[in-house]
Length: 210
Image (cartoon, rainbow, N blue to C red; front, side):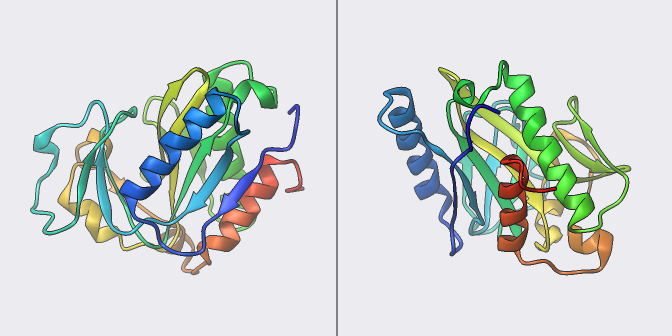
């Protein structure tokens, strides 16, 4: 990696619309070379987001007053909420030694996988490109979906740590029928602070995780 990747960890749960606008503005600044950008680590207030392949029929139960955003990213329908770590790497990946989108995505996927295994104790983790995420056997624990413009993405990764998984039962997660969703808490019986996991992943992406 050519240089250390800057990052920012948010203290409070964040409104999705506000963070989406923040990402878009930050990306514009990175493209205009006004900013180096950074990787954002945060938790969202409850929200459903639907990607470019999302379908109305993927809502199988009413979602009540939880907002729904139709956004330009890969993938289908998912949920974000407290207890879930969201990672938005809004940087020009060429500046950090990556030669392709795939290399960039897999680097972050491997970093997440490493921290889940070594710090959280989650076993049997495998990344599946075709299913856009990290799986524990047949259970999905982490998700990805991005939108790239001039080598700079918005959106990113989400990782279930201790969030309420019942929200996923109202949708067809990621467009996969009967998709089983899990979390660090479900797999290990332990509750980790989201910030602690964020700090470990930040260390991992900058080579300090060993």
